[in-house]
Length: 380
Image (cartoon, rainbow, N blue to C red; front, side, top):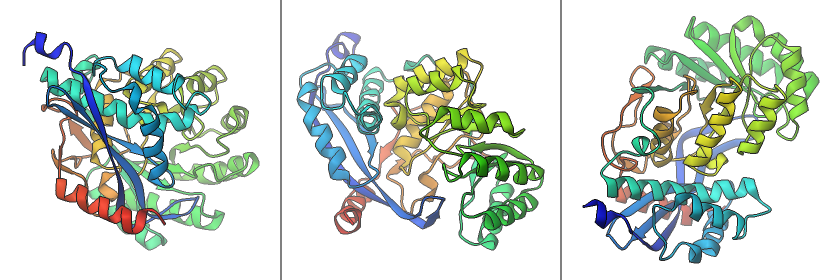
């Protein structure tokens, strides 16, 4: 396709499909036990016959995400796919989201993701090149320990260590005795590999300080979001009282949040996803703010498919202040939506992407099964 032909590719429609992604095993964390996750497949259709794909997340029923996107869809029809900033800005501030910045990010990120996929396909280039090019040839991901009992966690931790993940990630916040026993056992199982723990906001400030001191002998690489997501000062109090590095996660969803955290020196690292930030460009903006303060950024994952993991990988390849030990989630699913490429890390790493756009080919049969699963399970 010539440059002239690609200069005015217009959006003709937005196809939205609620899906339910079923986990291989129950997903245990401080908040609850999850058995799957609703998402929305977003497909942006164009007058050039190019379709871009993305994925929006939905913490509850996917109908809410679909309804919100339908409200702003009239802003998109007939508009150029290349006007990413303008389209997302208008949807966020002229649409229905101007008082809901966090929710706007979760909803609009899948649309923006699909725009980048379409733009990359039209240009014949992978998205990371359109975001400034690669600053590294591979991205490092952590091994995510799964299980309920200590024995289950240890068995999986050993598998991840044997697969040569350099960073191992463990959920805590499940009770003091369980946290101490699980952390000690996983530490023994993985040897000298780096160990991160995540209580998902489960601790008060005093409890966070007490538990981090108790966990410190196990050589913790960092503790992710140890206390409430509603207070920068709470996180700063914890950070100032302990020797283990503190990473902000649920408390940081926008570029404004990043600015507040780094300005107040409330964290040593920031975990963020394009869904939380509101898109790939918003993530890059947030990462640049953190970089200016000398704070690294880590890719965070919602319960998503390989569509999002692929999109995040493009961010990882092109973000200068990225940490190692980033997060992907598709490996937790019974069945991914992506037929190719293989997104399984080798020695904890994924390399450069060659195909244009996000570089993913959907498994349409898997999509159909996930849509059927949503009709049966995802609404409950």
